[in-house]
Image (tube, rainbow, N blue to C red; front, side):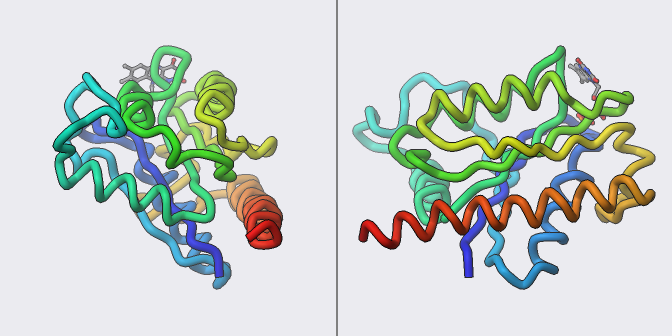
Length: 188
Ligand SMILES: Cc1cc2nc3c(=O)[nH]c(=O)nc-3n(C[C@H](O)[C@H](O)[C@H](O)COP(=O)(O)O)c2cc1C
């Protein structure tokens, strides 16, 4: 069983992209192939990063908790809305706190917007961020256009295309995460 952590990066009041985070959470759990941990960045009230965790003398407990949730994951899924053609600032801020925790993690990318493009710009930039932290971005991404129409409040797909894309994303991600996890096990 893979340990997969979802990192959800919108903290805006009334955030619609929580639907995308719920959709991926539900689908991964339903696969029966993953233990899923959900990190909602909003719960942490993270200050703007002034020092990385590794450079702190007395790190706060909440950062140590986040660090071990990342470290213990076989893989992660980043979920973010598109803001001004990019991922959310809250997501970037959270990512910047950590260093070695990200090394060689398989990372899936889920982006959404209330427009028709489904956060494609955010997703492309997020792949670059994943490369910058020494992790592996999965090539296939899940884009959620018209968040309010594609998914209901519980993250349930509202049309066939959304369901198909979600299913494909989950199956590709499980393959990708397992391949990397198996290679790590082989090397001990
Ligand atoms: C600051 C800000 C910038 C935004 N920029 C974009 C954008 O560049 N492209 C886009 O498709 N939607 C953009 N949107 C709309 C979001 O896609 C929309 O709010 C959607 O519901 C997802 O964000 P949410 O989870 O905060 O609701 C923007 C929204 C905000 C608040």
